[in-house]
Structure formats: C-alpha cells, structure tokens
Amino acid sequence: MPHESRLTAQGQLTMPAEIRRKANVHAGTRFTWAVDGEGNIVLKPLRLGLADVAGMFKLDRPLTDDEIRKAIENRHAGNRE
Image (cartoon, rainbow, N blue to C red; front, side, top):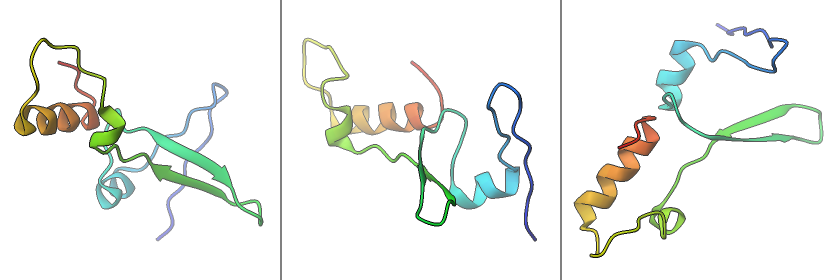
C-alpha cells in the first residue's frame, strides 16, 4: 500500500513510520536528494563509513575500534555525546 506525505510551507516532509523501519533510518539520519531523468525524486540515506568520520575526533590518544563504532552508532541514531 502506498504511503502519502504532505510538503509543508517550510519544505519539510514526514516519513511514515513503516517506511523508516523498512529503510532502517532514524532521527538524525542524513539523506541525499536527486531528480532522475524522468523527474522522479530519489532520496537515499547517507551511510557514513570510517573514512567519512576520520578527523572528527580531537583526542590526545588514538580511539579504539569500539569507541569509533559507538560514535558512529550514536551519530546515526541522532545522539550527540
């Protein structure tokens, strides 16, 4: 069954909960937007990898793999520690 959303005057859309669950996206997820050759809007979640977050941390010691994974998960979930 198709889902509908309405574009607000501020340019915002609400993504239905079922679509968020199926796409595994959460509050704080960033997206890329494009328009294809047929005029369809293409919306894709931006998935960050380790190379994308290099340099985000300013510490006096190297981070462990677990610390990096946790930081990425928190960022993906919209949490800021």
